[in-house]
Image (cartoon, rainbow, N blue to C red; front, side):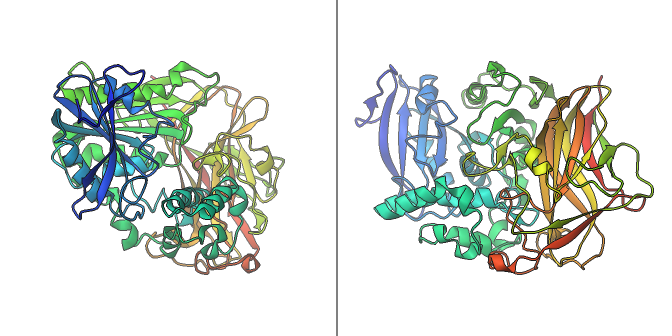
Length: 580
């Protein structure tokens, strides 16, 4: 199988590889692909992955190598995105992925020995390279497996409720700069981007952002485009999957991780495509898997390292998915609509929808005697609504924000806060309000969407409000489960922000996102409130000025008040699973 240029792959009898096969996009730009051919005359289905991180690797950092899929009877195509690797042209994130993906799908469907059906897989940006061409409905695309990817590239990707996802956006841009410099044979540029990337945690402190010295090398100008579009405007809307889900007409297996940066977007894609996809086969064949994984690596977070939580399961599930939709194997299919690995319970559960039908909203109200500052304060959580209580007060200084520990950022722990972490240092700060329940008298399993409703006032005209939902074990260790932020000026709209009136109380909704966790008998629920979760999100300088234009001298200290009384019932909202 394959052309005369295909070579045997050592150690994989029957698999041949053909490297740097060029084909034209519709505008004549040549795109480069590696093709892995299975043994035999076929016809075989095609599996395609398109990525900006070197087609040779094919996201082998998480998935089995393309040769593994070829060994199971697939022609596997791994392609460099336009302007990356060996492909021609210039690359701007998202800009050409819909059309280039369509053209590659139709080209791959006509490869020698193909049965004309194409499936796609890949995570993160390689999830975007599936969903974007799917909106154009290429006729040969039969199924996709978008993993750990967004529903759009403003909310939940570059920004979160108006706040810049600094740790991810800046470190991602730095990681992209090195390969861009390599294409220009700029060794000094490669070195500069590499050094800056591995020192990202230091660079996150750089201000002003629009003069970011490590990103001003000319190879990552799109970072400054992102800063120039801090609202959900036309720049972002043109690439948003969730603007119109009816454009997607293929079955999809959505894979997420509980500590993945794009968890909310992946879940939204699954939920909305179930009802809004543009074909009956697509609406009936959406599946969701959420494992105990980070973005990179897909490392299990469980009580013990368990094969039950191995990311290798994803390869097995994808193979079954493709066997069903590309080969017509009725016995091979991912039957459960929702498959979740429940944290702290350390086992998979299956459900028929998200959130589960037996998930009930629970409100845990904030209480204190006016001194909820830090874990040493008197902040409490209770299902009993407050009556008359003193408010809590703290100051937020952008120059010394409370440290972020763990979280849902990307993509390596040396560039961004990721995963579960002991919150002791953060919760020791008086700039963080901490509210904790009494020990639970029974186990509580939470599956669904969590959020915080906060009644708060600031002395500033602009500020942020952050929340972290944590579990406190019987030894007093506090571990983060989910977190969220709202930039005050975006409290009502992501397209038309407006400043706040100093010392006026507003009601804020802070989405925390999906959770799936067991809190055991004797453990406690905790929520912490502050005005920064840095560097996961950029620091609000409390001035109301243009994003990215402020230097460190612009910082204004804000006095922040959180109310929790009968008229202002601030609360943590959790999805409790009703037991059968």
